[in-house]
Amino acid sequence: MPDEKERIVVVQFSVVDASPDARQKLFALRNIMHRVLNAAISEWHRAERRPSTKDGDKETRDRGQVTEAVKQLLSRESAYWEKRVIDLTESEVSLRRRLEYAKGMKKEVGDLARQHEAIVKQLGAAACRASISVPSAISDSAVRFTQGKYDEYQKTAFRGERASPTFRDGQPIRWRDGAWTIAPGEKSGSYAITVPVHKNGSRLEHAVLRVIPDGPSMYGWAKKMVDDEAVASGAVKRCDARLVYSERKKQWFAKLTIKVRYAPPAAGLGVAAMRRGVHNAFTLAFEGGDCRLISGGSVVAFKRKIKARKESVGRHLRSLELGKGARGHGQKRRFAALKKIDDAEARFVDNRCKTWAANICKILKAHGVGHLLVAKVGDREFSNAIDSDVLRAFLYQFPFAKAYDCLRRALEYAGIAVEEKAVGLNARRCPSCLHEHESKQVGELFTCEVCAVKRPSDSIIAWNMLIDEVGGAPIKKAAAAKKKVGQMLRKTKEDADASH
Image (tube, helix red, strand yellow):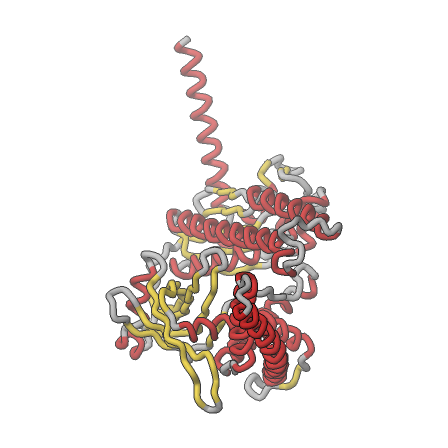
């Protein structure tokens, strides 16, 4: 159908069964993924820009150079673990001899037995990491993923507001599209996922994982993924896959991405304007004269708490006051507090952005909006509109880009068109009399020096965008509605006075 669109859906499964050998290989791959990603992102920074044969005159970075850097890293990793296996083997032999001697002398062997058991486990893990050869389906996926992250960084690098991405341990294992398969399992509601985990010469070794959908809404998507007719017709396309290990739940989760075609619902014919504000998170202006302000104070307050907590933990780290639990346990335990704070911040921001997107989508559909105008936001605008250095610093960290991405996806699924516009000097123009002020007003309230109209400063740009698109009817309707409400209030007061 010509009006069909495509959307990306991430379907999550819980891994309930896997062979011990498969689990060992998965942990070995997981333990090197963050180093692979960091090596790839570092190489993207160093890669030379060369003319591309595919894109004509455009310049693109050399992906082969990044892939070669990843292969060299994997080769160094293998060499390191081969040496580690030799050292652990010597330690295991020494401990085994001491254990046999203690048994022969009929001495207590509890501590020696535990040490021997621990080193045998370490030896098995090291041998697996030394022998494993990462398939190209995983390394290519890491290169593509870091390329996207580097492009995101490059878009805002000139502003200096986004740091180059780095990756901590515990990164998910990624496979490119076409490298994994899924099939119905033996039991109803269960499925079997097959992924390549090791390359032995020209032959790939696969791991088979038994999974179940993680959540009620995942069962329907899982059925579409294994529908051969839908896959053959192109209605469902299997994309990349990820395996994530949860330290808290001690369980593996599979996140499989699919692209599905859908027919968006019929949208309204109205136009609305939205401004990502300074004193409010979002301002919406409608043709009917209605104006909605959505506060973002909760996010700023939460970020303030997070920043204070990070500074407190940082002071303890600098003074080596790490607590008894962190001493002698390496960086993972030492920086666990900071990692927990970062994860809490990421979860909160992600949840709030998705909630905003859902609420705004619901409001626009209720007003019959089919086209939304969004004002572009610049750093200079924030600098000129905010007096507080503290608030300005926090607003630089405000998730405007993430919130806009969530909103754009939600509106796309609802069939509402989104268009970004550069507003220019619209912040100086009065939406009622169209008088252009010489300078932009600073503060929460905009007051016109000619007609004395007063409106929240965040709403001025939204109103002017809407007036430029559909004319001055919205502001007139808003004034008429305000006048009508005032008349009703005065009449109610007069009736109350007369009754007394």
